[in-house]
Amino acid sequence: MVDIAWKNIKRRKIMSILIILGVTACIHLMVILLCMTIGRTKEMHKELSIYAGKIFIQASGPEGIGGEFPPFSSRISSSILQDVLKINHINSESTIPLLFVSVVPPSFPGAPPEVLAVGIPPGKEKIYTGDLEGIGELFFSISDEKAVILSSGAAKYYMKEKGDKISVGDNIIIGEELFVVKGVLKKQNIPTFDHMILIPLSYAQELFECRSSISCILVRAESKTEGMIDEVASTLKENFPNLVVITDKENVKHTNEILAEMRRFFGLIGGSVKATSVVMILVIMILAINARTKEIGTLRAIGATRRTILFTVIQESLILSLVAAVLGLIVSYLLMKFVYNNANYFNLQVVLEIIGTAVIIGVVGGLYPAIRAVKIHPLEAIRYK
View: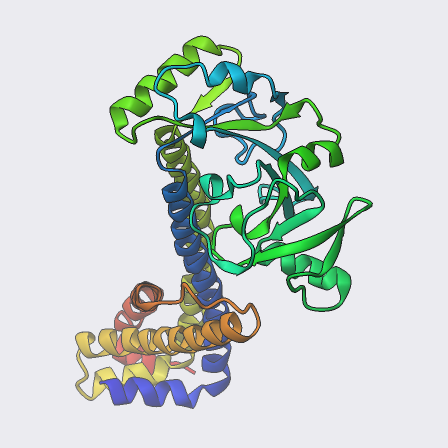
């Protein structure tokens, strides 16, 4: 029956090509949505692992706890740090003030800033970033002022501005000031870290006119145990009721809420795309059945069973859908690799999910036309013109 289905597809080449191209476009969109979901999930979980065991004290964000992180709109007094350090069980060496400033706004709503300046005390860089790798010096000395450490995304942005590759020792302009690049971090696949510029805190406060304020305080407890972290967080909330205290658990909760919302949104788009694919196959197959009414009647008259006709039509639909899926996967991979320059999340999970979706689209799209086909009466069909 497969050879018969394939011959029928080849007989109506234009209709088959059109449906394959239409479903291929839908498959490509589904691949992009899947890769975005997988990629964003991995990125956020990787970022959470860096924030594990850390507590952040900040002003209330525009959307409440965790509504904006890093909190570049938050401003609190620098003097609060001294009061925080008086709290029991706080690791004073690893508790640091941070200043976040959006240097280049987000490219689209909800995204992190295109370039985010992070003011940080010299020698304390790893407390915030963890053990990130790169070239050059990835730390500041006390004497550093007009020096910066660039992330890969920030280096790429200033490369466009400068028209040349950014290297250690080059100068860049932030605001109206000239800075020397001390180091460039490797790409981490974490949006927050891949778009930041590290600047010595005191100079960042002067540059961005925040001399007596910071964005937040990163707090580390003496012990990384959950009980100790919860105890310190509870004490901080009692002592600073007007500020927001965010623990790693609250960050995880908020991240899961964001991911759930993202999956719902992408799921809605994906559902619409699948429905579009089903409708395209459905319409084309109905037209094909109408055009082959006499042929189907002849097959019934010479002994073809209803089951044979049913499975032949469904097989035609399934073949079209699977050909479109394979073509869509190939096109998507090539575009992501050579145009978007990001095929990191195109994996076996994506391939299997797309193939499974194509099977469902093919079966569902061909089911109604197949049922219509088997209801054709042989004698009436033979008289059909």
